[in-house]
Image 1 (tube, rainbow, N blue to C red):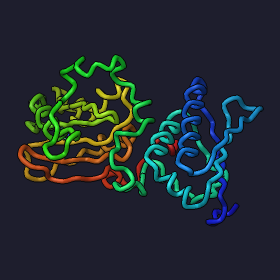
Image 2: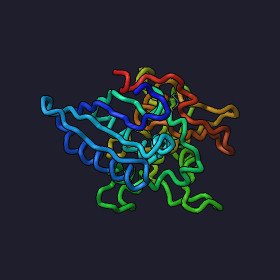
Image 3: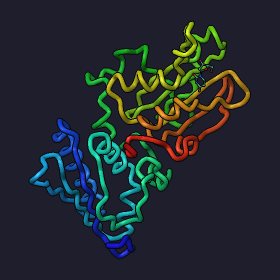
Image 4: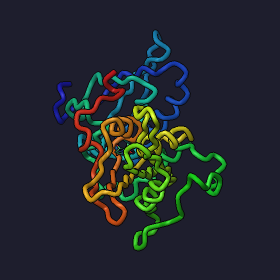
Length: 281
Ligand code: THU
């Protein structure tokens, strides 16, 4: 049990926040199902009889490579990040990989080849509860679309959405208008613009407006955000926005653009190295 490649058992202590037991059980069951269905191994949950909210999650990996694939699997990552929101996890036996406190959200191993469409994960849809009536027309002012990219059917043009959102910016003091468009796991797009006021300090950026709109409507899974300003140089998100985007959106793809062209693409983990988040509390 020293982290060598031959050990194929991982054990984590899971302390579930009171009131979230049912949600945790659903997530653990889904996690177990994915492990079995994809041949990664099996997982069992052992309850600590002395502590009603304390469990031991025991994972028996098929082999070391299966454990690696499992950690890189976007379905697993989505489930794990949901579990992290309602539980404190301590790795007791790490038989599959070396300790790496950054691994869950940094998402190093996720490659486009293993994740052709990040919006297809069942778990993302399960958790992404926005618009429960399923009527995509309701709230049409929020929904941007159905403008799709030519040549790439199915992909929403979030840069165009951010450009339109920018027109609503209230930047009377800086005159610097910004628009943002944030895509959720189910393909819904929430837009935002910066809004300033006479105190200056209460200004809120376009990115946070978009994120808070989405969160306030029950969305918790995000894939991409576009940010648009009328500048030749790229306008990357400010530090405060990086923190909020990271905590609620994880390693988003960030598209920067001006009114006529895209000016850069980045992954949030590259813009926010060594992040502080709930895992460190
Ligand atoms: N701003 C944004 O909305 N997003 C950014 O990424 C950079 C800055 C806003 C805040 C403020 O209203 C104005 O731009 C100038 O800083």
